[in-house]
Image (cartoon, rainbow, N blue to C red; front, top):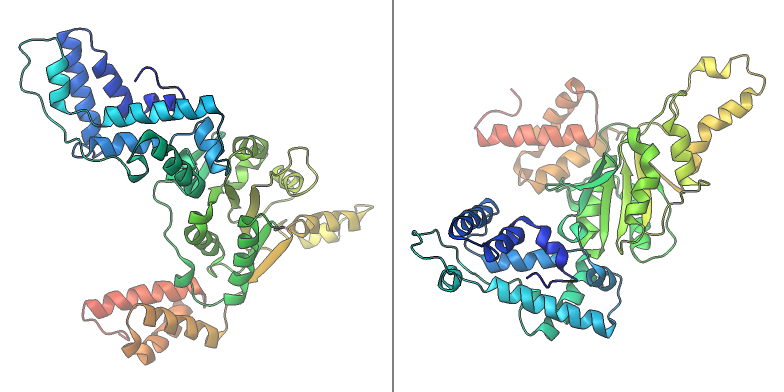
Length: 402
């Protein structure tokens, strides 16, 4: 285990590190302590019944010279690296086959108490077979799924100059969104071009609240993550960190959407200039494997007062043009406006059919109009909220039009 080279990073993982300490325990007391820590680590990660599956999965998510090269599509490895990879994978497989009895028989400590046991289980599928076969299978895995945390997760958020994974992203899917087919198709086509390494544009989705702008971006991720798409949400207040973010993803062989939600600026906002620089013209250029998708309720992003236009500035037109220039730097702008009554009821009908409520459509349409009047107007979000409420009422035997 100490001889791992390419996959040395797995020694920093909790279970692998606990196993390493157990194997190198020097006396009876340290052996017992290490055994307890190792078994506790297995239980905490839910793998006490499948130790082999957990240990080998750490190799799937390890970021190293081999996994990065394979994810980038390079199948031919230098001879020395290939031999090192084969050695490491053979070592990991051998370790995954260790049973509690193996360790107890080989230890030199007498009079050991009854100790908790784990089940060995089976390794992950790409690590089944000879070391040579495993190299090819792991190459295919990395090519399809990426490497490191980008293989394990699809959604991320930028915090404290770090890219942090989102363990439970919003499961929104494109086929669950109703209405706005033309707008969403524009976003889909742009994203597919990006994934195929064709020319694609930064995208601004703007319009009324509750119309599905953010949901469209989330649904794109859930639809196309298996094609190498990842999304990193960057809060507006961290836009000054953009150079740090692109430094961390520029060499990763994945396609990233940098997602900025609910974007708008005041005239005194220093991040306004930062985003302009990011979109076009800054020294810290956006890498080829990244696009910016932003949502906003404002087409022109910069809040503007009538006093701004009637002020006493000599070059007032320059100031007005500055307020409009940011949105123009998005190559693709998509407008999401509130639906009229007919479109709203169509969304309600489609949501009702999706949930098996088509027998109640007349009542649902009447109730939806009432709901929209009370809850701030017609929008897809209001329609979804109403249908959820209606479904619960029907399940509880309550009238829809009480």
